[in-house]
Image (cartoon, protein in one colour):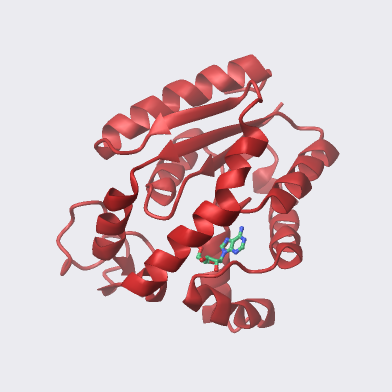
Length: 222
Ligand code: AMP
């Protein structure tokens, strides 16, 4: 059985940072659908270019496109032992499609973690967030806004969709479309909640604990 993780939580909850760390430590691929789309835009990939206007407005890209992207990514060899999904699923239709994909792989169960953070804190964090214009790495929380990227030395910039109006739209979209996902998963024995309004190392510790516990319950190899 693989270790198949879904990180849920609103924009700014720390999903990206925590997914990257967890995936690195466990030797799993971190699969961020937002990163895949942003990379695709840079590489002029038609599917991503078609999605760009929606991304810039903070709206969701259509389910069929997103499911096709994830299906292809999960079929690659590095995802065989498991994966950490960040930013997918975002709708109940995507969650259903993911259940089916995992069933086809015969590699269940899914461990689903919801990272919870109060809304005022999310707005504050998103206003401060910086991302590398070169390689897409997120700045560490609290890192000086002017600092260059630690990985490639590139310039750290605000994400287009972290503009305040777009942030409010993304949080609204989250409440309306993604929040029902929590209800979709809540009754599963492998669903867990983590308090994301703590320092990153505390969140990391809580995440590791609940994921290992849920994986053991679900019969996955942690
Ligand atoms: P993220 O980096 O995860 O916040 O994603 C950035 C943007 O990409 C989102 O605001 C959406 O426009 C789009 N996107 C990423 N993942 C998905 C998804 N699973 N479903 C629909 N749209 C997505």
